[in-house]
Amino acid sequence: MFFTLFLDLVGFSLIFPLFPGMLEFYRETSPPGGLFSWFHGVLSQASDTTGAADAGWGVLVLFGGILGSLYSLLQFAFSPVLGALSDRFGRRPVLLASLSLMLGSYVLWFFAGRFELLVIARLLGGVASANISIASAIVADSTPRDQRARGMAVVGIAFGLGFVLGPAIGGLCALADLTAFAPGLAAWGVNPFSVPALVAAVLSVANLLLVWTSLPETRPARLDGPSVDRTLNPLRIFHASEFPGVARANGAYFLFIFAFSGVEFSLTFMAADYFGYGPGRNAAMLLFVGIVLALVQGFYVRRMGDRIGPRTMALHGFATMIPALALIGLAGPWDSQPLLYAGLFLSALGMGQTIPCLTSLVTLYANDDSQGRVNGLFRSAGALGRAGGPLFASTLYWRLGAPSTYTATLVLMAVAGLIALGLPRVAGNKSAE
Image 1 (cartoon, one colour):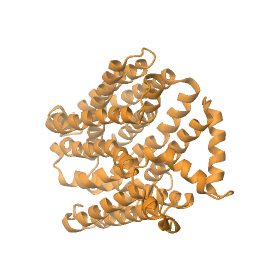
Image 2 (cartoon, one colour):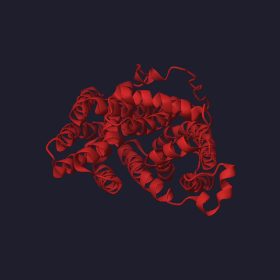
Image 3 (cartoon, rainbow, N blue to C red):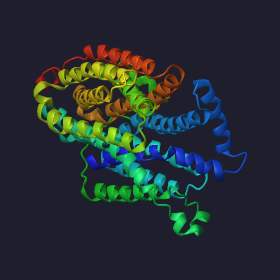
Image 4 (cartoon, rainbow, N blue to C red):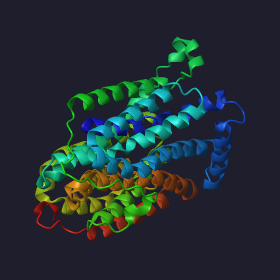
């Protein structure tokens, strides 16, 4: 499950550093009147709306934000569906089906000489990436309730490493252009960005084989499984649930991810504006965050999460994020890189505690028969936050600047923490206190 989750986040983030180059490629090769021409016109108008000083730069920002949000919106919509299907038909078959669909999306991306095929590949990938809810349910199935925070820390480590290493892998792989060695491949849709897709496809095949050969079924045995929830209203993640605490945890998680993903998306632009960071220094900055995040989750949360209790540790994480965002917001105007890195350290510390502990609480609130469905709703809330946060932050950044952006995200984070204060304790489970 660590590898499955890691690969999901690699697939989500591997394309991030490629957006500017991909835009230039499709601008030069796409025919007039096609989807790309229409999309480019819409983005140009949106760039003017955001107030960006450089319209071309604004188009690049919005191009990346919208494609990334599209992926997350589909994950948001389908996480409850795949989770509920795994409750009904078993974790293993639904996970294998989703991994096969993910492989298909990478194959399409490999041959995406046309922009339309790239969009289809991202659509399929977004649906398949909703298997995060199944992976979380498998971890919940496989860990005792009093060790749930420790198990979910592994989920958090996979998230942190995948999101940090994905862009690095994508950037390195993009240095190799297959069409430069064999120009005839372009007739088949192979393009300068096919190597990252090929690497992702190879990893996906390995993942599929590993699950096929090594993963047993973990869904608890029962005579009558719950019916699959076919509601078309994904906003039910914020509605009351039959399990006290789940809806509140989903709301706090949504706001946390919304605020944090907005900061994360705008961070490289802020570093370039105020400190002149290029791709290399931005990559080093993100690597620093990823290393701290992995250390926090791998050592502190895994060792202390169940002892302190996931509810208490999650609240510690929310509290840590407030000074973290304040320091990051002040670093640029005060021209202080040490202040920036202090804020990044605290943000990694806060995120490392909050996400695995909220995940643990949700699995403790639900009964064993509903882990897939409830985890699906929880992951859906996070996917919705990842879809909206970057668009919110990028629009606010280009209209009002970095200080206003980080002030707004700080307020959102404070509201999320207030919601989390009302999370109930799990009756009869000391570790949830």
